[in-house]
Length: 231
Image 1: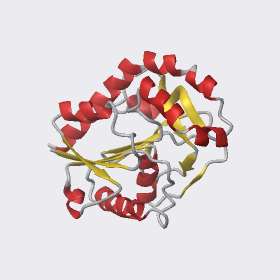
Image 2 (image 1 turned 90 degrees about the vertical axis):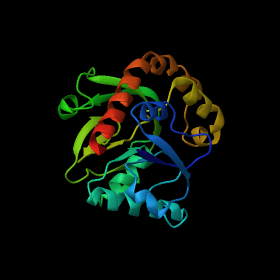
Image 3 (image 1 turned 30 degrees about the vertical axis):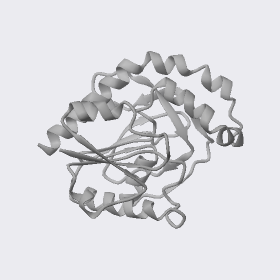
């Protein structure tokens, strides 16, 4: 089974999601800012994060190609997984506006609150009502028609959704504490632009490390959901 993974920034790969997909039987095919026509027929398409906005297709034409591919797959009920920018692109592919959020830059390790529907979701059911995850975004989107809202935070309501057999996560489910720490070193300009207290964010990393087993379990369940879906 092929899982085509669209990546948009250097040093921001699939993280711990990759091994979970491989263990479930997927072969990862990685694309960097490019789309091939055969990708529309892959058993699974995974769209990762990036520093651009889903609405910046004129500056980044590959975004338009990926959104068009996602729209075709969603229309044909072929499974997709979106992480951060990828979730925003899935929302855009479903016809929803993606925009710069008014509640500021959400960054660091902090809990999402699973909705009642999320706690009944076949992948998520069994988790605690709140799960600490990695955040790095300010863009958000309006509710996706026909989708089930799975998670929210106080700052942004749209944190995770299920649409048919596809899932979108605004947060970085794949990110472990050492990698988030490296991002804090790699992109200080962006953090300073938003007035982020980098030391305060770094102090949150032990909470993310403590949540790793729960996050790994979620990713394995997600990967097996997709494997079962395509089989």
